[in-house]
Amino acid sequence: MNEDLLKQKVQRVIVCLSIVILCGKFAAFFLTNSVGILTDAMESIVNVVAGFIALFSLRWAAKPKDKEHPFGHGKIELISASTEGLLISIAGLLIIYEGIQRLFTPGTIGKLDIGIVVVAISGVLNYLMGWYSIKKGKKYESMALIAGGKHLQSDTYSTIGLVIGLLLLYFTGILWIDSALALIFGSIIIATGISILRKTIANLLDKADEKLLDEIADCINRHRHADWIDVHNTKIIKNGSFLYIDCDLTLPWYYNIVEGHEACDNLQSTLISNFSDKIQLSIHSDPCLMEHCGHCLVTECTSRKMNFIASENINLLNLTESDDERKE
Image: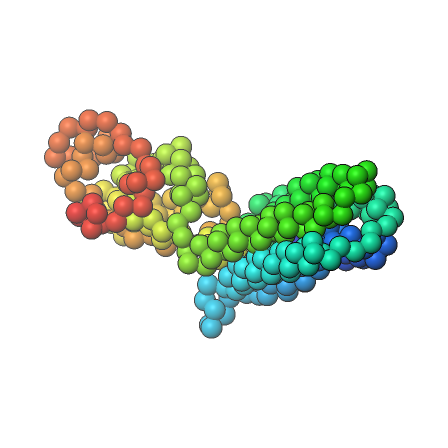
């Protein structure tokens, strides 16, 4: 089974379990009439809706690139994650609204012991599903699975607080605790939604991933060939599971086309073997200049204009530095 089908299988499992949890939480709400439990149930609606959206996006993202979409369809995963963030925020606002209403007109609460058990079990299941989704999302570079997993795990953290609050309500009988729980966890849910939105919007705008750039710089340093004099002007675009990398590679000025092409192939093979076979790399080769002699590792060079001083490691700064910034 290929990667795309595996991601869809993971998401189908999560959607099915989310539906089971949703039914359990609403059953607990109708038994107890607790607005605190209603907050958990309403967020489960978001989980199910977002799960279906994510499943659709994964199926769409798996479509091969075509003339209209030369970079593939992977960006749909970010749109899915953004939709999930928006839905989570709306659910949080609705929960706060209901909590404020119940604060002034509290309802009768019963069978809270059953509700607490259901909420606790659903919290454990959400955490396990979230852990599974994040693990598979990181393995297959899926923003949709990672965002969904983080959302599910944030449910667990709020569920822990909710269970504590419901236990206080159960033993004290103070009804305003129920409304307070809705206000607190409604706010937490909104914060979670905003956090997901911020990250997905940054990726939609192709914000530079400094962590990934650092990893690429480290990889180049560890596997560096002597004729890779330096690598600069590097840009990365994420598109689903694919990485589109554009960079400039400085090579000895006297290389012919075949030698230059071989050096570029070596860099591409190195990155693919250490990261993913879903890397598409575009390399522009630059000829070396006299100022490169001081850190050039090509020992057999007969055109050296100055003595070798020390090797220069590739880092985030020089990896992303443009020719204008380097004044080349």
